[in-house]
Length: 389
Ligand SMILES: *Cc1c(COP(=O)(O)O)cnc(C)c1O
Image (cartoon, rainbow, N blue to C red; front, side):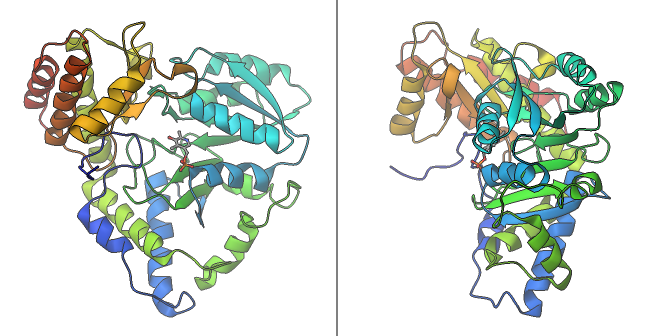
């Protein structure tokens, strides 16, 4: 095994050298003034990446999953009802977490490959006259299927139903790579992790809370200690932390935000869109289909590619790893074995994307799939040449 990068998994993503160095820090007293110069810019930078003016950012030594728990445990009480769609492994796991916390879940099952049905949500919310539903959970980008859902449409559905529930959005594989507007979309809690759009090692849960969400924290009675944002909120003004912070990761977060903002969020999103479109052109040239059913659902951070019936896509992923030292994403849950995923978020250029497509073609040919070497690469090349940044 060699550590040959770039990797084409949808997180953890490839790390820029500058960020690898940023997280590699000597011991620092986190009660010193020096930590303030790391923490405050990191929090401010994340706020801008989340596109929120009024929200507050809380960062935990954890991962995206801890961010889910932060969202629900700080705002809800046992027996509360939440509304969520299950359209892939990540939405499934967040629902499972809610159930394990003693919440009732109004679960809308949709085919994997579909997005969150905002119209169905509107019907359910409109029928909930007693406002039993306290929160709507939405996975912005379902990483297991490469499906992006329309969060603005979900907010519009909630507003149309006149429903006061909070809107929690899992943006783990969208924030920092696809447009995400916390304020404009009325997102009450945004959740992500350090190892996707922020291009850092895993180790941070990154959350943004709206003022409306913050108003619910005192009344919420789900047990919480480590993830209690009241402790974070009390400590931050003096640049304190309720426990020992992972200083290097927070320094990485500061620099990652600076890097994204220096490129310009619109440029970051356009780069991801361009790279993703090249990958999709390659998939079309391979005569293969995406798991995502329609162009409006196509994710710009990961493409999930269906392989022919009877073919085990897991074997393809394993072969690419052992023979070519290149990591692709395997199918998860209901789509295990049926698809493989090309992650194209974070640090990635067109040139690097071509490498992944070339290796995918070799691996598919080795495994006996009908693919003409170079066909997908050429389709992507043509697109990348024509679509100048
Ligand atoms: C990766 C991912 C998660 C899980 O995050 P961890 O950091 O692995 O805990 C949750 N949701 C989505 C959409 C993801 O892509």
